[in-house]
Length: 280
Image (cartoon, rainbow, N blue to C red; front, side, top):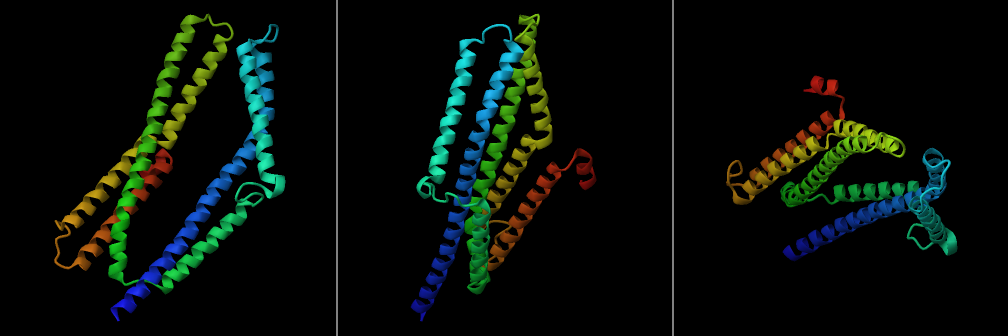
């Protein structure tokens, strides 16, 4: 009897894993297809933009003199690269049915396939739902992955914040240096305009997206979740009950509360400053 139950549980697990693999495969195909479409359209647009920028730089900075060979080489190389990249991608996309896995496949169709796969997975999971205790135990095993995800996002926003800060440092120092070096004739005036524009954009982006605050919140949530996961593993307070079911239920409730708090903080960061004060 136990072997029959074990066989049924294994088949249920294998079926759910199969649906998850199908969903993960479609998600990866959508990411790949999005990059393919972006590259195809991006390089096609970059070809005329590079040519127009080349002409604009010539008119603005070297209208009555020859353009330096370094500038011509940079723009010429970029133009040739985008032309070759466009031709290669067009060949891969359209010749002989395409060499990409989803050549000529609209992203809308892949998203629809993903929605259908998700729906099949949900229906099957609902039909083969395991007992509550097993679901709570499985939930506990997923928490380390969630902690790792939060920490990865925290590191990402921390790097974005550091990049913005260093860009501000160098751009601000560059403005002072170019002002002191030039009187400023061209190209010093153009460099000052570019540096000032960079400082303004980076300052505005840092104030709007708040990468430092996002990194702090994500790291704080990850640390709290890890603390509760360790307490559950060691059987210490607040998970010192004799019954495993009670500890798992309390753990799942606490982690979901931490995740809800994290989502609330993210929403507050996405709101304007006045809206944040009203929410708080």
